[in-house]
Length: 281
Ligand code: MG
Ligand code: MG
Image (tube, rainbow, N blue to C red; front, top):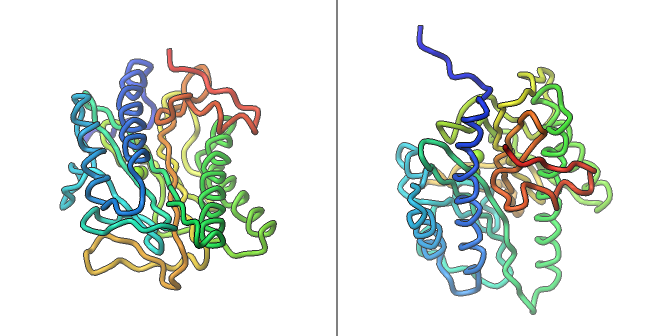
């Protein structure tokens, strides 16, 4: 019988999670600054790679079998796992960028979405902005739920509830991907437990100090049905609706929660919920 890695890290191990989280946040900031019409997705990937390398870290995406890039970049009807390449960003595109860094044996994982401005298609831009706001909002609802949750499954309940309320308010359909989920994070980018973005009957493991989770709702402006492209990676909507992905790595510790991949620890995103993140001591 092998040793099973604990879901709950020691305070010293949690301290190891801080720097890779910040490097991941900085890598996404570097990408964010470059997103514009005419830029290729491989140029964005190179910026993330340069930032991570400059900090003495390595891309943990490159540690995933069969993957050689630093980021996943998913445009328009692609939701997640898009491969950076020669694709040129156009005005109005909705672009989700997912990246992660491994530093001194610990990992960060985060994703952001940006809508490229397009003065000629304000309606398209507004709808895509709204999809991004709703998806990011559902992420913060999930993180806020973690702050007081007894079980991991309460996160998915909060994410789904947020999406359902937004759909009702907007009078549109939003789909939550069910085939892709969040995860524990630590020595490896992908660890247990599974973090669902929707309600599940089994609420899963207890929330206790030491738990580190990557929470990552993947949402569409239509059906939740997707397929994997011939490149064996890119996950695209079947109905052609837009996809969106936001993600943060979050630590639970004795003093509360801390969003490892946000420079403010999540203070701004959690403020509407009255949750004040506590730095890891
Ligand atoms: Mg990710
Ligand atoms: Mg992840």
